[in-house]
Each structure stands twice: as C-alpha cells, then as structure tokens.
Image 1 (cartoon, rainbow, N blue to C red):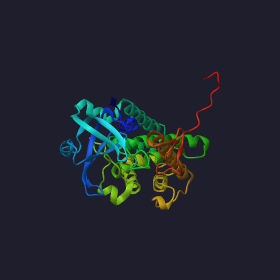
Image 2: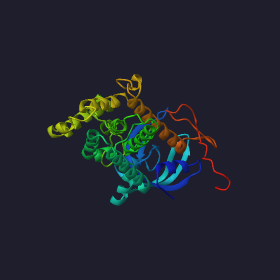
Image 3: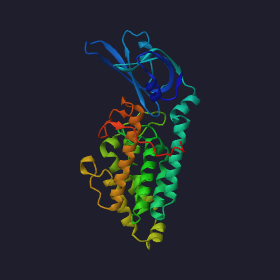
Image 4: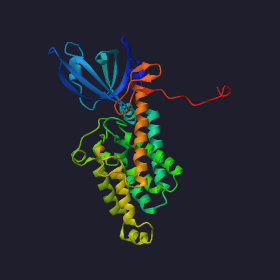
Length: 345
C-alpha cells in the first residue's frame, strides 16, 4: 500500500507488520547507544506535514545502507512497518530515489495541501486588496511582492502549531479570518489596522522558522536566534515603510487622517504586543483594542490547529478522547457534531 503522508503511515502501523511505502525526505541521522551500551542509528524523515523518527539497530542488515543515506535526499521507502515501544520501526526497507516530478509533489505536500496553501495565499492577497487605508494596503502589497517565496515556505513555529513548511501561510490566513470575523462584531475596531497586524505579526518567522528551498526542516539562523521574530517583524515594517513612503506618497498622504506616522506606530504596537503578556515574549502588553483583537485571533488560530493536530495524530484514550498535546490544557475530546434534524440525516 502507498501511504500519501507520514501521518497515515503512523496511524496504520500496528504491532503486526504492515507492508507499505511512503515518500519522504531524509533530514538527518544521529548515532546513539542504548542503556546497555548497544549502538544504534536514529533516522529522521519528513514530509510536508509530519516527521518520522525510526531506530535502526546495529545488527540490522540494512544498517549500512541507512548509514549511507545523504541528508536532503528524497526517497520512497518500502518496508514492513511495526509500531512498538520504540515508536514506528521499519523492517526490511528498500529505498528508491524519487523522480523530479515526485520530489516536486512531495515538497508541495500533495494536491490537497497544495490547493489549501494556494487558497490561503489568495485569501491573504484578497484581504490586503480590501484595505481602505492606502498606506497599509501599499505596505501589505510590498511585503507580499518582496518576500513571497520565503513567506510561502516558512513554518509558523518549531512546535505547538503550524510547525511545518507552508505553516506561516496557513496561520496568517487563519488569523486574518478570525480577526476579520471579530471586526464584524465590533465595528468600531480599525479593520485595516487589525488585518495589517495579522499579516505582519509573524512575518519575522520567515527568518526565525524558515524552511530551505528544497526541504522540510525548520532552519536556524543567526538573525532568528539573536533577534526573534517580533524584533525582526518590526524591522521589516520599518524598512518596507521607507520603501513605500516615497516623497511623492508622503505628500499625497499628508492630508490623510490619522497621520501616516500614527498608522506606522500603531502597527508596530500590534506586532510588539501580539503575544499578549510579557512572559510570552512580548516587549509590551496590548494597549489598544486592535492589539487585543490581534492577540486573541492569533491565539484562537493556534489553538484550533492544536486541536486539529491532536485529533489526527494523538493516541486514543477512548473512542472520543485523544491524549493531550503540549499547548492544550487537557486531553482533547472530539467536538459535538452540528445539529441536524432526522429529515436532514
């Protein structure tokens, strides 16, 4: 059987051997020893959604072949898969290099995920296009034009939520949807500012949790480590602001209210305050309604993704309960299905 994602392979693996193949990228190996000193390899494979860590014992005949794997290689692994106390193990694996077409499909996440990313990217563009404030609209367009490729491949985190290639697009679109909905309930809120904040709040993660052009692993960078995504996001806004606020535009915008400088300052506050509390890394707490809306929209989208991931990947404690993942307050119970009358059933 061919599994289209690592998650489906994990869900299919049992104590009994299950034969199947899966397309992955090899992202690294570590030499380790057991408590008794026996050596083994720990291999990590990835696709667009999840990672697979497998142990290869020193006496396995396929150990030398695994040692020869090159980081970044894209492969189809056909094996007998077994779930045990060590996780998911592969037995009698065979490795085949992917064709260029198969590699492209792997990096895109497959047709379903690629379509969802394209829809989210289009939604982000449409929200920027809908902004009435010409300054925020110009700034948003400048970001999407200047950093589209890096934006589309970045993860939104290293763990917790949207921690995968393309996750930044998914999360940004989700925060925009939540923020736009909140703005319909509280119409005194500056919608353009909130949407701009949603677009820019995590843009620094293009460097803090960026992914390589041809890979899934979330990279580390000096800028990401030394600055953090909030500081980087503030710098991105200030640099882009200088590029869009030309002398001609400055003269054109001089009569606008609120002032251009106030718009910039309030947007910077949204980025700085979006974690909500100082303990979570924000240098300031939300001090405007728009900043508070963005903070909660960000948190809502992150939590919804945590629930989705938990339902999909966590162990079942009962038919309706899934084991808690870090970030949630407790075990995840399957949601109540929407009401339907007997006539609708």
